[in-house]
Length: 579
Image (cartoon, rainbow, N blue to C red; front, side, top):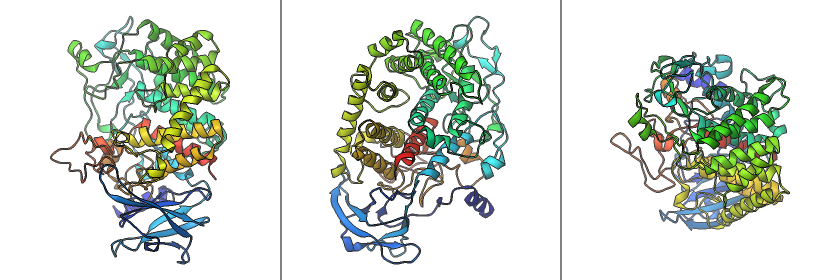
């Protein structure tokens, strides 16, 4: 184990200190803040200025000026917390400590530097490489997390729910490549499309930044951004999920049941493609149209843009002709065998998927038919994007690419109105954040679906208006993710002084390596505690404290590509524009 830990420390970035215990009462961003960014820490209880000491980590001399902004009670737990601003800090590393902490409590590190989130962005992008299927994960790219190839998916069976002319039940197709979806080993179109979509949205707004980002994957060094190369690995798989007979798209590629906590090479269940669905087809159409526009003229992937555009059109037309083809797994299992018990990604409404797909096809083709389809399905108000509520990706795109149009103006108005509503809550927040100030902000995947996505939305508002208050608010949400929160965890594996060591992730659990694969954002506090049982005991049932760093905690500690995609989109954008 000691050798493994040493190797891991060499592979991981210099700021990684996973596994260290962050004791005491100070809560702060453990990854890094920018010189021009506010420096805020939170202390449990009512702390006076004199109880907080800030010292230069190199010289030991006191640094900065400490000012209490407020002491506030949590609206649900009643706990007191003091929000403290530290002013006058230049570039450097600082030790922040509360005098009322236990005698053995170590100081928390506060790092101030340009490109403070560059390493965590690279780690979040690199995490997708570790999720690749159907190829060996090599030591020169993965270090101690290398592994043999698994799930080649060159003999995938057509499930009885997915038959079409030329593809009878039990016939075999090849559907290789792509990413493992989450802690499990299956591949899902709906979530893949969302993941790619939100990363491409951020890429287009920060092209120069992402083009320069090298994360050491096999494709590094070609003429394409590493982020786009990684996305292409999944796009190639997605193309194999389209039925050539009619253009419909299979909902997922899956085993009947989840595999155990074993490595991919030790998995032996037959894998299937199941029912074509309207949501998968619209999501596929949107992603392919978006990718066709972005990859147009790309020399590393000649012909892809044209292929993707054709695939998008075919999938959209199939979805238009099959509006009732929603994916209901229980109903499918009553009709077809084998029964499937893996993740459903079921959705009873496809209007938001249609809006996103029509928007992307309109941006690709300029065809007024798609413009009209988008108008007919446009949301009345803004809601944060999730895999099952995806309209806001279309809203982002219209605001960014058609800002002067009626649709673009409406999208801009929705985005700004939403952002103003959450910025207004910062002044009474326990952790100086626009998100996390109501119990509804916590639940399954909340760190991505409340904190990351609202941060992304704030960055759109910043770009659209130029008002720095939105940038500040987005930075505040990042501070929460990286440690300024109720549990004191930096919620990304491999980063910070206290980060998850036992994510619900088969690859990390079964590889024999003490440290988990780095760069993975866990789901986060979930008061639903759906995994609570005889082997799992949460220390708290409060919304922002319902987190458990335990391999079995799928409700709070699983990882997923859509959550990591939101992290990539947020931190990459922040690092591109923050100073």
